Image (cartoon, rainbow over all chains, first blue to last red; front, side, top):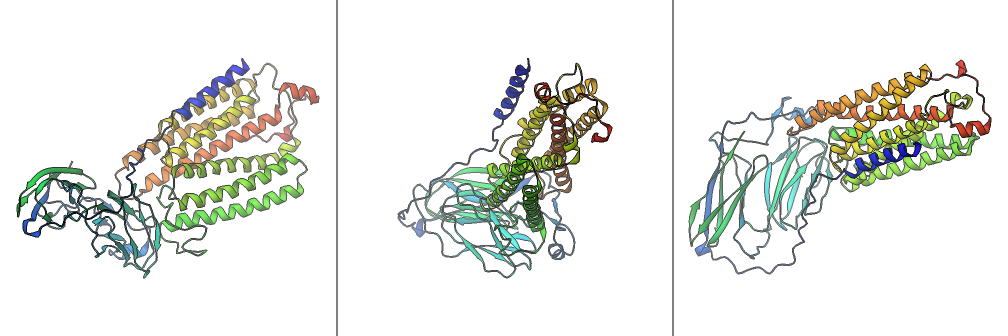
Length: 259
Length: 280
C-alpha cells in the first residue's frame, strides 16, 4: 500500500512533466546565402513600375498610449505627456502608414548587389525612427542614438544572428548587416520596453514603406509576373498578383481592415 | 525584472555597461538591481558557508553549507549565460529553478541550525495516525516541480497546461495533508497545514488572476503595472508556499523520523514538550 502511493504520485508527476512541451514553433532555418552571381542587368528602357496605396477600412482605432515615466528624460522629450504608439497609424486620407510593400515572388534567381547607402534607424525622444524600415541582405543598417540617455539595441531575428548592444548618449553609430532574407525582424530596447521597431530584409531593392500619404512605388522592375505583398505589424500580410509588360506602370492597391 | 521585460536591458556581463554601476534608468534599474541583490546574497552565502564550516559540528550540515555556496555560484553563472545568450528558455528556466533550490537549501540550513531543531525530540507518530512523513516530502517535491513548470511557462519553454495540472496536483496533496493533520495530529501541526493550505489556495487564485491579466494585456505596447504586479506576486507567493511546505516536511521528519528508526534508537515516547513547540 505504502509503495503503491509512491508509484501513483510518481506517475502523476511524470504525466505532468511529459505533457509540457514548447508552444513556440521552431524557426525555419534558412541557410546562409552562398556568394551569388549577379544576373543579367535589368534593361532600364523596358523597366516597369508598380505603385499604389494602402488604405485602411473600418473604424479608425484609438491609438494606444505610451507612458514613458520609467525615465524622466524620455517623458521630458514629450512635454511630460503620453504619446501615441506607432503600432497603427491611420493617415488623414484614410491610408495606413508603416506598411512594408515588396516583391514577394517573380524575380526568379536574379540577384542584386546591396546598395552602398546604409539604412538609418535612429533613437530620438525614446522612440525608434522610422518605426518600420526595409533593407537589402548585406546592406548596412546604421543605428544612431540621438538621445541624451542610454539605449540598448536588440534585434530579435530568427534566421539571422541575434545581437544586443548598448548605446550610451553620443556613442558611435552601430553598423550591422543581415545576411539572410527575413520578414520581419523585431527590434526592441529593453531599457525602454515601449521602444519597438521592425527591420524587414529582402534580397532585392523592390520594396518600400508607406508614409504619411499611404503610398508606395516600386520602380525598375523587369517585365514579368509578380506577387506583390504588403505587411503590417498588427494586420498581417496581404498579397496580389500583377503582370508587367515593358515600360508598364500599374497600380496595385491594398486594404487592411481594422476590427 | 522579467515582467518588466528588462532581462536584457544590460547587454554585458559580469559588468554592466562596462562598469560596476551603470545609470539606473528604465530597465537597467531592474536588471542591474537584480545583479546587486544577487551579489549581496552571494556574499552572505559565502559567509554562511564559512561560518557553518567552522562552527557546525554535524558534517552533513557543513556539507549543506558548501552545497549552498556551490549552487549560488552556479546560479550566478546561469544568470550571466542567459544574458549573453539572449535569454534562451532552457537557461532562463534553469536559472529560475535553481533559485528555488537555493532558497530551499537556505531554509533547510536555517531550520536545522535552529534551537528548535537541535532540541527537538524524535517521537513516533500519534497512536493510530497515518504517517504524513512521505506525504509532506512528496508535497515539497510537487511544489518545487510546480515552480519549475511555472518558470518554464514564464520563460516560454513550455505551455501553461502543465503548470495548471501541477497546481491541481499540489492542491490535492495540500488538502490531503491538511485533512490528515487535522484528524490525527496535535493542533499545531493542523495549524501549520492549514496555513499551507491557505497560502496554496491564495496562490491558485492569484495564478488564475495572473493568467487573465496576462491574456488581457497581450496586445499592450509596453509592460503594464497590473501584469507586472500580478506575475511578480504570484512568483513570490509560490516561493512562500514552497518555504512553508519545506519547513513542515523538515519538522515532520525531525519529529517523526519513522517508526523503525525511532524504535531502534529507543527515543522517548513522552508527549511533546511545550517549550520546544515551534509551530507557526
